[in-house]
Structures are given as structure tokens and as C-alpha cells.
Amino acid sequence: MTAVLSVTDAVKCFGATRALDGASFVLRPGEWLGLLGPNGAGKTTLVRAVSGRVRLDRGRIDLFGQPLDGPGKDPRRRLGIVPQEIALYPALTARENLAAFAALCRVPGGEIRDRVAWALDWTGLGDRADEPIKRFSGGMKRRLNIACGVLHRPEVVLLDEPTVGVDPQSRQRIWEMLEKLRADGASLLLATHQLDEAERVCERIVIIDHGRMIAGGTFAELVARTVGNKRWVVFAVDRQPPGASLPDGLAIAPDGTLRAAVEDVAGELSRLLSALHAAGVGVVDVRIETPSLQAVFLHLTGRELRE
Image 1 (cartoon, rainbow, N blue to C red):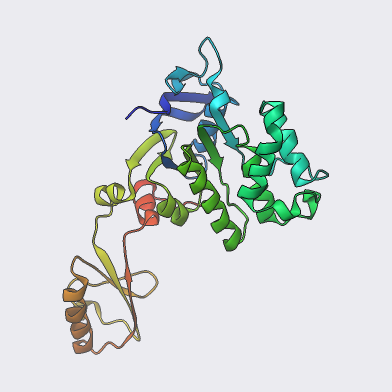
Image 2: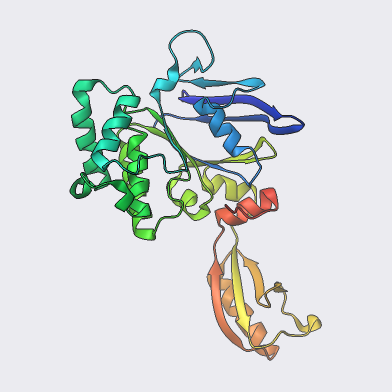
């Protein structure tokens, strides 16, 4: 499948610091791709390079098969950028902000009114269109911030932490907005620290660390290559058995629970419960943990993903 965005062997140094060290990935048509990485991994530098704020020392970035820094018409006109920071004019109304950004994005004058009306409906802000946005909640500003970045109908959209600092209801509304955008044909590159959200909404995920892409694929593919598909059975117990009497397959976790990796939960759970009972250990609670993106990320980087 032809890539709408491809980054090949990207290298960028800031003095002695190599922020990007040969990073490569592709974004496919209509795809929702997650970009994950620990702090300092090179994720922000990569997003800035694609958006034109940073020039690579080596490597290549192509948008729709055209090099970003090559001759001819700049392909970034087909690119939309939604920054993590709220980039709005607080004294202006929502309608005025949208009209201003539509002009900045070179939306033809005759189309601005229709594009603003579309954005107000898309964000659910039509009833607040003529209020100064300094009165808006954080979630409302986030939705408007996203709309201002896509008024020119970009075919590729870079999203840098689009749900940071918003409440769960606003976060769900934002994901619904973005899914509509993708359904209309846009390809989305999502840089986020929210692993649970990336796992839920992204079709593929790439993980960057130390300036390199260290893994990429669907969630199922990443799990299979790293932590495996076994489930963890976790027992909260009233006391820990002596090491010599620890039932086979169980290990004591740092939090004091007992854990076992199993392939057949239904078949193994009964055996483990019986073994604990025979060892005189009371089970207070049982939970089943499925493989998660958090576990994959820890396996690959040795670090939790934090803001």
C-alpha cells in the first residue's frame, strides 16, 4: 500500500545530543497510526521535522511521494497540525477564531463561512459560537483547537496529545470527532502518552526510543513479539506461603500478590486455587490481567510512559 507519509533514516542532532538516530516509519492512506516514546526519545523532534519546524541533518521525509524539502509546490499544504498547546485567540469568539484560522490556512474566501459552520457542528460548539473562548472549558478549547487545524481539509493530520488535560466526557467526544475525520479519508498520526487510548483507537503503533524506531505493528503483533499472549492470574492473599511451599507456577510480586502466567485460564485457575488452599493460604481476591500496551512498552523500553 502506498504511504501518504514516509520518514526514512531521519537524523537530527542538537549539539552533542542526537535527538533522531535513523528513525523510519510510514503512514498509510486512511490509517490511524500511534507514535509512542518515552520523554527524550525523539518523538517531538520527529513531529516538528514533519511539520517543517525542524530541518533534518540527514534522511528524508516524503508526503504523498514528494520530498518535503524538494523543488516545486510545498506538499505541506495537504498537512494539518494540531499542537499540544492551545493555539487560539482568547479574546475572540469561537466563530472568529475559526474564521481567522481558515484564512491563515488559505481556505478560499467564498468557502470560509461553510467551513466555519461545519467546524461548529463537528465540535458541538454551535450554541457557544459567539462567546469569547476565554469562557470555555479546557475540553471545549481542545475541540476548537483541533478544528482550527483541519479547516483546510488536510489529507494527513498530525495530532500532538489532543486529549491532554481534558475530562473523560470531552475526551470521548474528541475521539468521535477524529474518527469522523478519518472516515472522511484523512490519515492520522497520533503522538500520545495515553497508552490505553492508543491501544483502543490506533490501527498500528510505532514506538521510538533513543531516536530510533524500535518496534511497529498492530497491537496484536506487538504483543506476540514481546510479552506473548498468556494471561496473568493475580491473587491477593491473606498471607504469603513460605518459599518452599509456593505452589508450582506462582511467583511473589513486589506488591505482595501472587502471580502466574497461564494460557488456559479456566483450566489453570482451579488448580492454582486448590494448591493455595492446600498450602493454608486464604485468597482475598482474584483478577485476570490480559496483555496490554503498557506491558509491551515496558518490555521494549524498560520505562513507563509518562508525560
